Structures are given as C-alpha cells and as structure tokens.
Image (cartoon, rainbow, N blue to C red):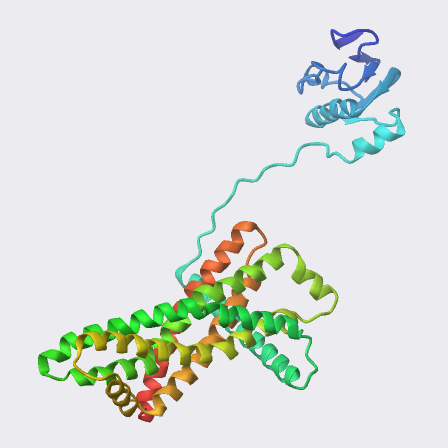
Length: 386
C-alpha cells in the first residue's frame, strides 16, 4: 500500500514519486519526466523513512519502469533519498537505475561532509620567538644563496657565458641612470642649498662663514649625497623592480622560465642588479657635485666671497678620501636595494593587490636598510680613522 506520494502540478507526463511498502520491503517508484523544468517543487523530506524504520529489510529498491526522460535534477532528488536512507540506517539499492545515473550518483557521498568547528591555536611566547628566529635565519640563507647566484652570473657575464641579454642590461641601465638624473639633481641641489643656508646662519655667529664650504663639501661627499641618492633609487627603482617581478610571478612568467630551465637569477635579476650597481656610484658623484653647487648658489647670495674663492676653499677642505668613502658606500647601497627589491618581488603573492604590497615593502626595506648600512659604515670609518 502507498505510504507517501508527491506529484508536481505540471503538464503530463509530470514527474512523481511514491514510497511503497510491500512484504516488509520498501520501494521507491519514479514516474514521468524528470528535468529542470518539470521537477520544480518536488523534494524528498528527510524524515520520510521515519514511519517505516522498523521494517525487516533495510534495503530501499527503486522502481524506474515508469521513468521517462531525466537529467541532473533526478540525481539531486536521488541524493536526497540516499541521505535520508543513510540517516534512517537504510541502504538505497541503485542497481535498477540507468547506468549513467548510477555513475553520477556514485560520485556523491552518502551524507554531507561534517563541518568541524575552527579551533584557535594559541602559540606560546617561546614558540613564537623561535618561529620568528627560524624564519629570519631561513630568509638570511635565501638572500645569501641569491647573492651568490647573482655573483656567479656576473662572473659568467664578464666571460660572455651568461644567460643575461645585453638588451635587458642596457634598458635597465637607462632606467636606473639617465632617467633618474632630474630627480637626483633637484633633491641634491635643494639639500646642498639647505645645508649652506643653515650653516651660514650658525657660523655667522662665530665669524666663521668661510667654513661653510667645508661643511657643504664634506657633508655632501661623505653622507648626504650618498644617502639621498640611495633613498631616491630605493623609492624609484627598487619599488619598480619589486612590482615588475611580482607581476611576472602573477602572470606565471617566472614559472615558465623555471620549467624551461632558464635561470631566473641570470635572466631576470642579474640585469636589474648590475644596472643599479653600475649607475648608483655615478649618480652619487653627480649628486655630490650638484649638492655642492646648491651650496655655492646660496653662499653667493649670502656671503661676500668670489666664486673662484668658494670653489678653491671647497676643494682644499674636502679630501679625496671622502669621495672614495662615499663612492664605496653607494656601491653597497645599490647592491642592497637591488637584492632586497628582487627578493621581495620573488616572494610576493600572485594577485594584483600583492604587486602594490611588494612595491611598498621593497621601498620601506630599502630605506631602512640604507640608514642601517650607513650607521655601520660610520662605525667602520671611525674605527679606521677616515
């Protein structure tokens, strides 16, 4: 006799199902056409087996003699039947179903996966400190490996055996050098002018205005020009390197190079790093002269001294060792900026937002690293008496 029956209010042949019990066995009879258009409103309640859970045979058979056309809507209905049967400790016999329906239904589990609640894991203080230390040590090792790869690539480039293309090197040299002359000129000129203005105001109190030439010359050659030029390049070129490499990472260009066996350090990183190492010392020397010229322009308006006298006093008061010291610092600044920017780009994510994050991080790391390196050089200079 019929236990439960549901019929859709659609045109014939309408889909319908009936759950029948006969001789201690359950049978699910399916009739009509089951598709997206005709199956609207038909579902299988999860408690349909509650009233017949005490039968002896725990198998639910399916009668498809009245079933006509069907699509995935039938599979969705049968999955509801299967979950309800599993909940009532019954088994759905799928042998009478069409072969394609059996294969589709076999892909679905008997019951939905249980969602486990998220458990917050609170690490202890020592665990967090240890994790940070291990991450930092791993990053130091990665940077050392990257530095050695680039160094080996540079040695191979001098022997003409590098994977680097000359065209890429020339493009990066242009972007890192001549393209940056305007901003380097403006910043260093203004810094030199500010140094001269502040120095003249203070030195005038002691009738020692002539020593402003030494102040501007030594400060520019030893510290200011190297630092300001490096900060400019960290914000301009370092951020561009990180953004470019992170974009290539997101576009899977880095993955393509690795798959084809082309070394990323030689093909992508080496031209960028070499170009900045080559151009930074030249920009430093140029920036130093512009900075001294900025001090000269201010001094000519505030001091009673001839132009020739100002330049003679400047070169007499500034030793060549100050220029050598600043030149060496600029080399280390350039290498640090380029390596840090490339590393940040390589470890960035693959989304569009990660490109901006990588550029910002490269600029911040570059500026902080420049100040830290300058402090180290100050200690070294004091130790060797420069």
